[in-house]
Image 1 (cartoon, rainbow, N blue to C red):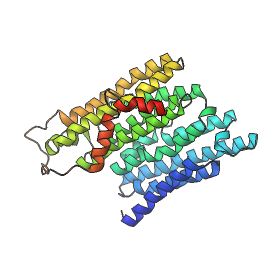
Image 2 (cartoon, rainbow, N blue to C red):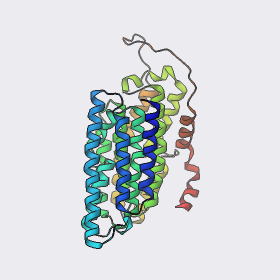
Image 3 (spheres, rainbow, N blue to C red):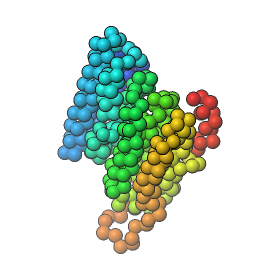
Image 4 (tube, rainbow, N blue to C red):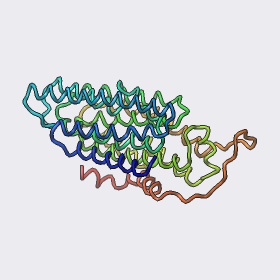
Length: 346
């Protein structure tokens, strides 16, 4: 892609996100979401491969439908209450429609079908944007309207997201699809707590974005898209593969790594809200996700390729590790000891 065009799309992405997260009026928030959608579409379809064009088409149709629902929700609320302010979403029907619209934008169950397909048809760098930056404006809208959302509906959707995200990721061989189902599962953890402690949702999203960025950039550095190519990565970059193992375990939420912090705080908050069965179900369902993270880690670090291979050997080059990968990986591993400071901020 032309560097000037790429700069325009990235700047449009920043502009759309900034407009949405700083707006008070529903129309400006909607405009920001539309700018984001239009900025990402060329990034998805830049390879001109039929799968990329298909992914861009699916993404456009889903986001257009979700944006229409956001407009419908805000107009319904304005019709009944006379308010266009985002924080004044008080009409129950409007809240339900908005929950459906934001779930569609994020990829929460049962509106998740588009996300794995779109991520599979996108390059790894675009997949990183779709998994992290694009989700910030919709989560911000949920944050601003959290006082008027339906807790039972969100709890149901969150539990289904964690279950399906873990279950569907078990049988995948494409790494981008595994990361898509991982994203759906993490969104369930964010959605269940948004009504009770919205700041905890934003903390979870921030830490999830750090860990996912580290995983995507590592995979992009190793040029890996499938499990059978991941198996050969140890011989090319052993140090990067071993750190990749720890990043995956952090994404799975194992202590004493960073990924354990949001899960610990969310389970603690759910227990305070007398939602012990939901907390137990989430803890058990997260074991499904742990299985496919361990599968990825096993392929990346433990299995060595056979000596009589049919595929072409790649040159063993000791490339220096990108500084952004080093910083993100470090943050993904060592933030748990400062959790008391994070809890006091919350």
